[in-house]
Image (cartoon, rainbow, N blue to C red; front, side, top):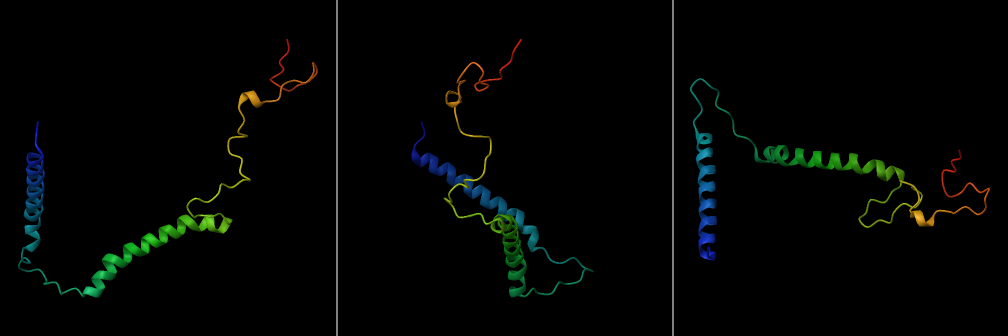
Length: 117
């Protein structure tokens, strides 16, 4: 049986090894530009924020508009907890077989397929 201290030690070791792996994987990113290549200029921080934050945000808003716009055009409510639309009939009436109409008389066609031989 393991104690809480042993479990904490194992989890800490996994976190430290994972963090060390990320640092080791990122070290080639600090390499110098090879000889003969053009030295890249510095990137403006505002431009970087617009590209890395603005484009994903614009895509998110665009997709959300494309998803919700047809429902809004039809006049449906999109708020959580909106009441069900009453004029839709998906799958037929919600009646059990016991609620089906029984035949009233011998000539009645209600209550089944009315197959005859």
